[in-house]
Image 1: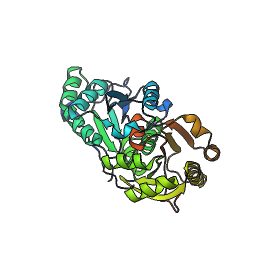
Image 2: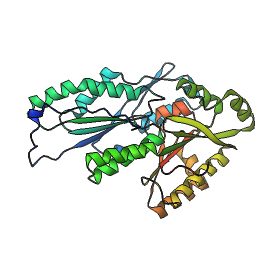
Image 3: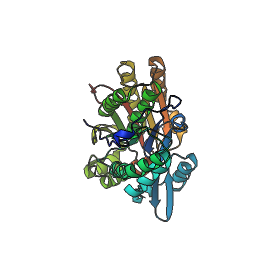
Image 4: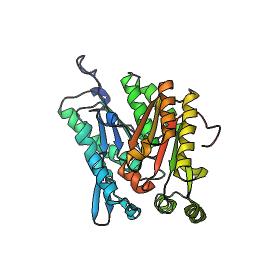
Length: 339
């Protein structure tokens, strides 16, 4: 098993009486703010976002998928100021309070999806916070005479940004299809294990500095010195909690074009494990939409019945990848080639 699950047990066995026939079990999804998902996904009333405060100098930004906050971040940090930024994720006690307030009485089951535990402490804080919340949730539900069991699962997506979004959107599809919890769990872990995220940083020096903060050594100093002089853009693949460069190209246009055409081929093969491709961008969206190869990817998705989600990257993603950075993700078979 590769994803990590925290189960919040139900009330004592004697209290496990069936729910009244009029009750509809309600399942919630909670994601941390760095997970890139569509606006339509975020509009679902059963979706909650764990905010991530970001501090850069004297300024503080709250990452919670708010378009105005994202626009402000880009206005004030378009020249790379975010390289010195610091994320201040909620600790376990704060997570506990968030979970109790949002889910204790209105839901019977909750899935919490976080970016990879190898690059962020958020997964650990969510796991500890959910365990701390258990006693309080039981008490609240008993006082409200709620005898139904309550479950809380914390899932490590083992990816970041667009890649974490693939698991979240696949989960929502499964819940809407009425899959059983057992089948949801098995399929979600399969999606997590087969999601590939491709990162193209625009500024190698910025990306190397930020990646080292996360414990990522995929961009080396020699690559930065040579790449900056020649405008080299690496394509870095994230998979199962690890990252490494798989190719490099001269200039943004060539790197983006190669990646979008590569993704279009994967879509055309008809072997994606979930019908979603996510592209997130740390810049003005018009720049991205003007890319001809993105149009080719869009057409491939339309022919295959796959949803292409082209998104503004989360503030956390923008701070870590840097201005002009891009991520693309899908779940599918082992790649037979690099972009």
